[in-house]
Amino acid sequence: MDEEKNIADALENYGRRVVFKEKIDRVQASVDMETMREQARLLSLEGTTSVRPIGRTRELWQTYRPTFAVAAAVAIITTFATLFMVRYYRNSNQQQEQYSMLRRDVQAIKQSQNRILDGLSVRRKSLITVNPGQIVGSSFLLTSDGYLVTNNHIVQGADSVYVQSQSGEVFKARVVYTNRGYDLAILNIADDSTFRPGKTVPYGFDPRPSDLGERVFTLGYPRDEIVYGEGYLSSGTGYRNDSTSYQVAISVNPGNSGGPLLDEKGNVVGIITGKQVATEGASFAIKTDYLYRAIESIPNDSLKGQPLKLSRRSTLNRLPRTQQVKRVQQNVFMVKVFKH
Image 1 (tube, rainbow, N blue to C red):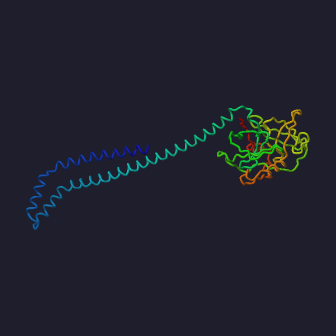
Image 2 (image 1 turned 180 degrees about the horizontal axis):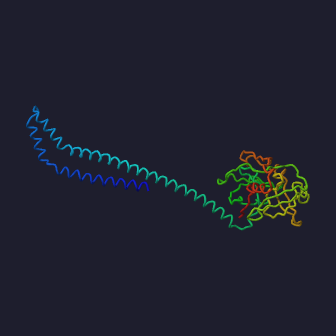
């Protein structure tokens, strides 16, 4: 709008100058040029020593002074008007060029964003439209920089592994290490360019043995939505007296495998690994102590020279259960595997 107003004002000023020039032309046309030439010739004949030429010059000046003044004014106005128009159009062209460059930059940014969004959309669509049987378990963050743990039986034989957060973000995961004896697998999603590391995980990892009857809870993905379950430790050993696991009185489904088992203080005391089909409500969880042992067995080159250290400090200790769940669920991921 400002640019249109400036152009309109410039055109209006130009019209006023045209009218003013026409008036000057009429004034000049009314001047008797033959008389002025004759008077100038007589002055030259009278000589330079006479007082008369000075008087005649003064007389001519008095007679035609308005005309000379108007002509000078026209010249000055025309000069400044020309400078103004040149400067205005030069600035206008510069603004147009800057606008064009800005528009190209914005267009490039939009195209880049669209490519990223299209990639994410294709990735999510490919995961959503596959056989639901490919949604096979859960996982949760060990560290905020993208290391996760799940069960070995979930990723075993997979050609590719993806994890999906509660908010729907999908990341490609790299299998860093597997341990069939403990049924544990360590994943990493930091290689996915869309992943952004967050703050430290809110829970701690407690390798000490837990007591029978201790209240515990878990979060996992037995279906497309995260599910909460709670119960208590019912045995210090797992299936067939397996010392690496606890038996817990929590009803779980296959999709819960790989999810965290936490105590009331917000410490991870185990990783859900399965259920006993013959006994309703009897499930098993690998003890956190064996998670530490598995991490110690990871080759250094698999971690790219960066040691994997678990925090033993929980920030959930004094929070009510609902707040504990809200903070934990942000770190629990659905696991999807693809096999050809």
